[in-house]
Image 1 (cartoon, one colour):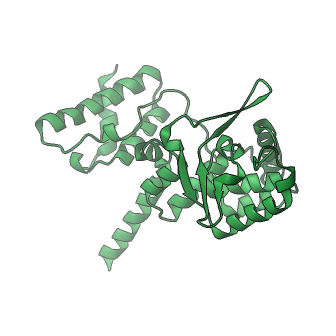
Image 2 (image 1 turned 60 degrees about the vertical axis):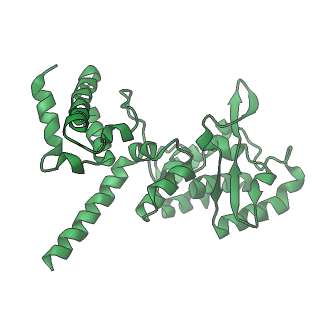
Image 3 (image 1 turned 180 degrees about the vertical axis):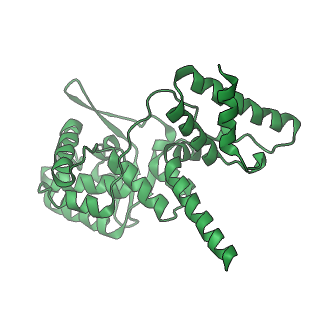
Amino acid sequence: MNMSNILNSITYFDNLLISDITPIQISNFQNDLLRKYKGSSIRTINAYVKMLFTWCVRYKNLASNPFDMVDRLKLETKKRMDIITVDEFNQIVEQVNNPDMKLMFKLLFWTGLRIGEARALKIDDIDFNNKTISVTKNYIHLKGKDIITTPKTKESIRTIKIDDVLTQEIKDYLDKARYILNNDFIFCYTKPYYLEIFKRIALRVLGKRLRIHDLRHSHASFLINNGVDVLLISKRLGHSNTAMTLNVYSHLYLDKENKAIDIINKLKKE
């Protein structure tokens, strides 16, 4: 490993006190490594910089190591993430005529549920009085069969609040469709069918090759851009911890941090 690469990477934190470096900045640093280097070089640089923080914790009274608060660095290709605005989403959903499909897409965009979690919902999972959804199951379509399982992590089992409009839309849908539902499941199509229909409409309306999982990312983006606390976002999405949320959406938090600095700069110039 070229030592100059390690030294150059450390300059990413120039002008920052080591005690002021946050988990978000560590996550951004790791994303920067993924852009600049390949394979073992990424792992080696990350390990050396992490060891520096560990040494400071042991011998220089650094309170904690911010590397311990971000997800483990993954070397596989970074997953694509396309985010759409509320206006773009409305353009898509206006072109959906099927009531089941329309409600599914709205639910994913305004709750951040995974498609498998939404497909597994039953009528009793909706509390119309308290305006909440209980997420306790996951749907898998495997080898032509529909399988209902428990969520893969305990954090995925959660109760989330829903807005007034979505609550009423679910109620209106169930009032009309309740008699045709199979075993009280709210939705009836297979996961691949939802994926295909969404992809097809998004491409036609926006000219973008979106995935249905991008609705979940778009919900997270909406919350972040409107100042919702990361802990609440993490719980709402069913992440194992806030570090996972920060790692996945670190680039969005960087934009928020830049806006915060702009506010501080403006204040000090007055």
